[in-house]
Length: 169
Image (cartoon, rainbow, N blue to C red):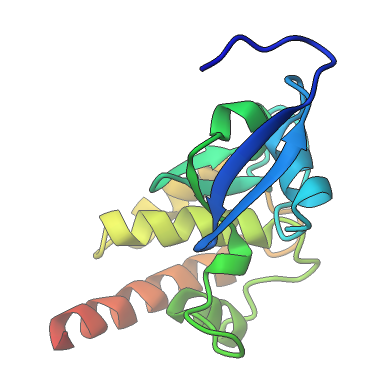
């Protein structure tokens, strides 16, 4: 990474939800702010700004990451997927998003984007989780509205459907 000087803006280039984009960022700008205010991708929410609540979870190069703990300049060259990139096509929900809808797994919706992003990656790597597995995994996310019951049900339902899709492919 080139030497960064404070106060000077740097070009940050990323692939965001399948599209090559770029913007200017100061060295201290958080990735959450870059995504929301520079690139206009507002689905990534800013909660605690300490990496504890999980609302800002995104996918960076195939791994979950807290965007509030990542500097925009650190993401230069990365492939980033946010909640806006979960849907397979415009007007169609992903299997996980549809399970959330059917199970009423959101209320205020503030935590939902981060939970969806984490679960999307988790279910890709853990196709047959148990209820306890999902509950433990969700320990990294704070939700004040749902009590997690519908979120866990939606995750297990999505896992079952995704296994069927993989088996049929």
